[in-house]
Length: 149
Ligand SMILES: CC(C)(COP(=O)(O)OP(=O)(O)OC[C@H]1O[C@@H](n2cnc3c(N)ncnc32)[C@H](O)[C@@H]1OP(=O)(O)O)[C@@H](O)C(=O)NCCC(=O)NCCS
Figure 1 (cartoon, rainbow, N blue to C red):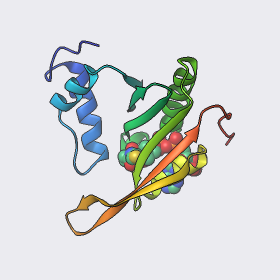
Figure 2 (cartoon, rainbow, N blue to C red):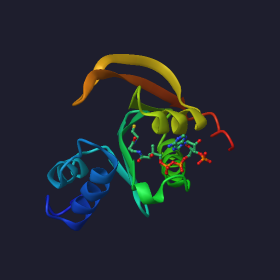
Figure 3 (cartoon, helix red, strand yellow):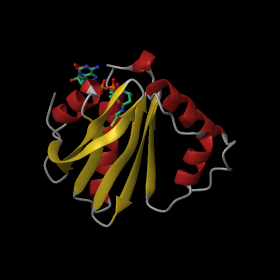
Figure 4 (tube, rainbow, N blue to C red):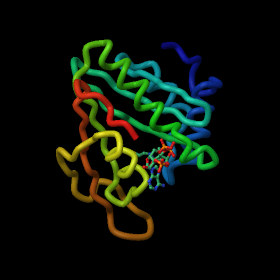
């Protein structure tokens, strides 16, 4: 995908949403560079987006962000469902991600969508106001249907 560089509307739009969702947001340049990488898939849904990296029959969620004003309306769920369907259609079998252990919203979302713990990275996320937090590695077997709400 050619995005037109870090000043492109798409990269700037993704960076703006990311800045509302994370304390350490990624820049428009970072998004522009990522979008130009092979194997990167972007899902967009209104006020949210998700970037996925696909390699062979495995995929990883690189980031998932929904604007605070649009949360708890199913945006992230739809993004994950759409990405999962695309990955399966392309022959993918497993979807991985990392989530901070203190991210209650993310952990609840992923648990509801059938992701299960497969590992842990100790002290992976630095925190300005406290000790670093572990990353939990989660995975979902895409050959199983998504659980119904
Ligand atoms: C985590 C995040 C992506 C969820 O997005 P969302 O669009 O609000 O999620 P959904 O509306 O699809 O939520 C689906 C379910 O997940 C769970 N969930 C989502 N947010 C939750 C919260 N704050 N507290 C508890 N459960 C939550 C609920 O079970 C929810 O269903 P319900 O609303 O019917 O109770 C969003 O809060 C966000 O962008 N957070 C900041 C960035 C982030 O943490 N990204 C993921 C990092 S890996």
